[in-house]
Amino acid sequence: MRESSHLSSVTPLAGSRLRLAASRGSETSAARPAAVDAPRGAAPRARARVLLYAARTPDDALVEQLKSRGWSVLVARSAHDIGKLIKPATLCAGIVDMASFPARDLPGLEAGLRQQQVGWIALANPERLADPAVRRLIRHYCFDYVKLPVAHATIDYLVGHAYGMIHLSDADLPPDTTAVSDDEMVGTCEAMQQLFRTIRKVANTDASVFISGESGTGKELTALAIHERSPRRKAPFVPINCGAIAHHLLQSELFGYERGAFTGANQRKIGRVEAANGGTLFLDEIGDLPMESQASLLRFLQEGKIERLGGHESISVDVRIISATHVDLEGAMSEGRFRQDLFHRLCVLRVDEPPLRARGKDIELLAHHILGKFKTDSARKIRGFAPSAIEAMYSYHWPGNVRELINRVRRAIVMAESKLISAEDLDLAQFSEQQTMSLAQAREVAEKRAIEAALLRHRHRLNEAAVDLGISRVTLYRLMSTHGLRDASGDDKGE
Image (cartoon, rainbow, N blue to C red; front, side):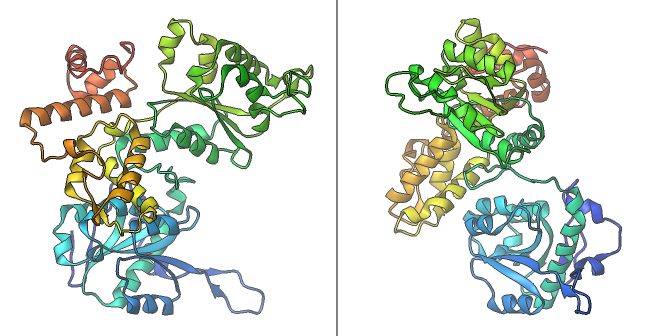
């Protein structure tokens, strides 16, 4: 790594967006704003250059300097502000002042820094550069960094270069670089990155998608993300929870009814399937669908037509079906509670939603994201999480997954009596490190998490999971029994 008195180059992450511009020798031209077509006889007008400046205490003189150089400066004073100001379709330069943010804000900053449509330049003082977490963020997500104090002209040059580089790299970026939205679907762990890649792949097809996962993992958010990235995104997304509607009403909810079809049917009603015409129908908790409705749904999937209750007209409907459940459908089929032919119609493409306990550092990242979104629920100015809260969140098993995390953080925001949320505020005091953990217990917890993650990655195929973990299939099977994971993994799947 080469360093000068004012700035230090940072080696980009392998395979990152920098590779397109490597060895082109066009730094100066890349930094220069491009011109757009102007009316005949008029002077060319420079294209507006957007710059996102993230700092807890922005430097007003730097902002004025950048504006005088033609930048349209957007100021973000928190990690939450960064998420609100970044627009998916807009490429821009970015400055993140690492020296102005406390260490507790770094996990929240990471979600914004990993947005690939922003070319980030980091500002940091020597003390912050000594922090391994800061060095990791700079190394992974920033084009370059400068040590403070530094001349404003140097910062202007670097952000211009980053702006040009991000535009050169535009051809390398996918249409949507992440599945993050305002609905807590955030994550940097490998399981979530795999989920985001899968979403982008299945969104471009029209085949039925089946989403499996525990309750509270965000299956509807995944279904919505698939719809919004598909060619059907301008048409309706219609969700229906099959487990929340009485069985005798489900047929009419799905397929609608004609006037006079039954007592109380005073006018025609369009069903959910027909309402989703041209778009996506999301069938949540499909495992709770009664057998009668299963037969009707199978007939629709085969023929692409429905009949409203009390009607005799076949109506053609073009919808994409996305279904989800936390129920073990393989077990339900073996017990005769779910039709095998319907399952194979619904499960053309499969997406596995990772449980929160298998997402590692994402737990803290999500907690900060939720805090940023709901902190206005309290009159007290909540600044973050105490160390006891962080430890408790990592130690807790999270049976309710992301939904439970949202509820606990929102409750803590209201109940907290200090500026930092504690383990007690989360009602997780018994899981904080105040209760010491032996080395053997720590190993046991780590071993269980590693096995859960491997099973998730390989969809519970034991041979592949064992190879990934570097152990034999027999050893994996024994460890699964020891940690109580055999029931959760379903049938013993081979290759």
